[in-house]
Structure formats: C-alpha cells, structure tokens
Image: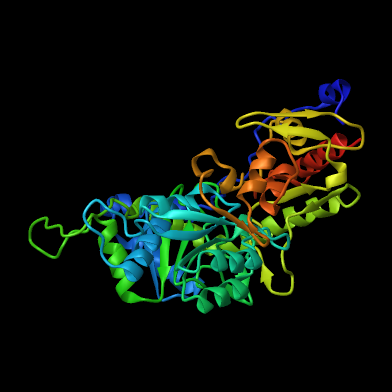
Length: 430
C-alpha cells in the first residue's frame, strides 16, 4: 500500500500524462488549410468525400457516411434497423416504440442511448471474461426469455473484438439484425477482417481520444447503397429533392464538417503506426506487472488482433483490499499486499497522470436500473440489486467494474514515463 512517505516521494510529471490524447502528424493541417483556402467550411467538400472513400476501403465495406460523431452513426443505425423491421413511425414517435433491443452491458452509454432516442427499451446482456465483451451464452438466454427481440447492439470494448462469429450465428438463428459498435476498435481485426463490417449496420468514432481523431466525428458503415443514402438524407435534416426546403420525415443535423474531415483525412494513413505504438504500451505494461496479482484486458490471440486503444488492469480477487463504491464516491481500506482501482487511480493522479475506472455497466446506471439485465444463468436483475446493497458480486460486468481500471495509454507517453506509472502501481501492492 502507499504510505505518506511514498506519496511524498512522488514527483509529478511536469506535463500532464493523459489517458489517450490526439497524436498529430502535420498532414492534418494541410487538409484543414485546403478547406479554408477553397472556402468549403460546411458539411460538404473534398475532405469528407476522401475520408469516406479511405475509410470504406480500409474497413472493406461499400459505403461510409461521415457524421458529426459516433453516437450519430449509432443513432442512424438504430433508426434504420427499426424502420426496416417495424416500418415508418408516426410523427414524433421513434421507430422502436415499445420494442426491446439487446445491448452490450459494459460499454459507454453512447452505445445504448440511441435505443432510447427511438423510444425503444434496452435489455442489457452480461459480459464474458475472454474479451470483456457481450457473452454469447447470455445472449442465447436473452432470446429464450424475449424471443420477440429482433435487434442486437454489440460493442467492441477498448479496441478488443468480441466473439463475432458466435454473436452473428445467434442473431441469424433468431432473425435479428446486428448493429456493430466499432467506435473503440477502428483498425482491430477479427478472423483477419476489420471490425466495422460484421453487422447489418456499423458505426465508428473519431472522438478526441480515439486511435485516430478529427476532434469529433464518426461514420456509418454499410454495404447497402440505399441505406447509405437514407442516412445522408436523415443527417441533413431529411430535406427532399425540391427547389425549396421540403420535409416529409424528421431529420437531424448530423453531417460531418469538411474541416473536421480534413483532420481525419490526414490521420487515416497513420492508423497502423498508432496501433503499433498502442501495442508496445500494452506489452510494456504486461511485462512490468508480471510479478503482481493482476492481469491485462484479454483478447483471443487465435482469432483477433485488437487495436490496443486502452491498456486496462484487472486486480486478482484475492489481492483486492476492502472497498465500496457509492454513486459518485469510492472508499477503501489500505492493506499490505493488496490494492484496489481507487487506490491505484489516486496514486496515478498524484503523478499528474490520467487513468479511469472501466466502464460502469449499463445495468448499474441509475437511468437504466429498471431495464432488464440478462446473464448466462437468466435474469440477473435481482442479483445486481444485491450487489448494489453491498452483497456478493453476481455478474461479470459488475466484477470488472469492481476490480478494473484503465491505465495511461497515450501514444506520446515516453518509456521512462510509463516505467514510473508501473512503479507507482507496484508500490500500491507493497
């Protein structure tokens, strides 16, 4: 455990070390300048066209539609799936009104909120331990309980592909559409293929901390030309082909800016080197922690190659000190030879570095606590309520949240800086 003497000896980094920040190369500025010089500063222009073309070629899909963010891409995917299955809704109603949708449980809420945007109800599917992604066994159980469900939203956590073959097979068996949230996994591969092409509809993100970035932005990916054009229409306020502004559907201001697209256009050629650097960081952590009672976020080395966006740490259960989390605060009791995510994150913070807990499962979020939650053993809601009350941890997602944290994973982190992070983590267990 850290002592006052140890804490006092910590010399903070002069410049803050971030979890993950943009890594720029120079070409980005030239494309932004091109947008400025040509006066294409709105939601049309060559940068958008080129970025869409380059991403479609990289992923291996027919169409990429540049949007304002990854959440917009997911919203368009969910809306399309709802319209395809249930038809056009009435005005001021979502396409999923009264319908349930199966969603990854351990993820950022942007994966899930689009279901609510369309008046649907998310049902959360527990996580498996091999990749920290949606558990196929839990998904099978969910279809047993809710056989009427026809949409599944699967996220690839922290850049690690989930069990795609099994999830797709289950979806096919039940006639369900699959939406692939590849926001965190751009450049990761499964069975030699890029993530972002396995769903009926797919989404990626260029948020400021992603492996390549435009400061914001996202893309909707598909092999269906009609769907791509539908998203283009919806994302520009659903304007009809008329000489005036004619609207027959509800639209959205979701189109990507040509300025943002300039940054993305300059970033795309550097994706592989960003992944290579991220993997170096992951492997350095794994080696540095080899003698600690911890493990790194796992992946299936035979089937997948992550993009290693974030390096995460999971503390062995027997090495956890006593700890409890409220809604916004956490408390722990220091113990020699043991630690917890809160202690480690506090220590990292003292170095002027940034870490964070793993995603809090959606079924534990206050806004979604009334939604169904399914584990491989069936309905997990009663057991999760016991966990909230301080009882036994009942499911994989809650356990990951209890024992896991994300480490500084910035591409620009120097080896000596990472070594200091490693030493501080070790000190927490001394």
